[in-house]
Image (cartoon, rainbow, N blue to C red):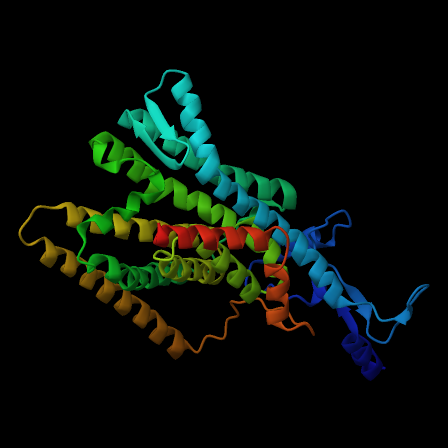
Length: 390
């Protein structure tokens, strides 16, 4: 009797029950499975079938229910939301920002722009205020849009239970190492102007800013904008994607964040930081880990700006000591955590896997070919190329 039950379980496929979400809390798993089990949820990946059973179709005869076709259907629907959100960001940066500048200028504000350039100029305070407003819209609309469409419970869409405080500490250490590595080309480029790339998204004449404008924009760039980015990429969108396994969700998230920079010089840094943020979020159990990673990266690059802007004779020495100290601190802390973990021989499971007959590369190709994600990805690559050529 037991062998018969065993054979039935092997032949039966239930992607919801078979999915291993042991990396998170029981409450998270329960809510996640409830969300996936809702019949009216078009973004939930549900497939249950017996491999030995066939279904009769009037036009095609007997056929076995296809898990692969259901994968493609759900992946395409999720990628549609991701693609539309990315398209909104691109349109906001290139069109809505100009419309906002013209609109505020029409109402008497000293803000101007041109048809062929998204750069704003005029009164520094007014320009920075509009830039912050546009960037808030740029970040908030995709976050709320994804939440309204996917309708995930908040505690499921945004991982909130700390499973390991050590992993949060490890995330900080790894970020310090990554920041030092990715900032080396900028710090030693030989061009002091490149350090102002921190303010590249402002689309304004930064040289005309006063201290108040610098402080205001720096606060939003270091604290608010990274938060909005994480809430979108590592929030409900990430949760919906992880129905097909955490490696799939991480790959799509990292690739999308990389493309959205539309800047080949920045892409290596974004790839590394987004990867660390996503993995450490899963290991720690809370989205605040991902937020911390992005904020530290922004603080690190801003610190380099402060060193670069100093007129001190030993500026280079101080900057180099800062980078070396960050690298050593990150390496020591991360190394110690790794050694302790090895000694304890912890077999704790961190990454949720999804098992399917479909190869992971095939699922990623399905995601990449989804409309309008493909078109937006090409648009991002074209814009990044134009920045080099123009």
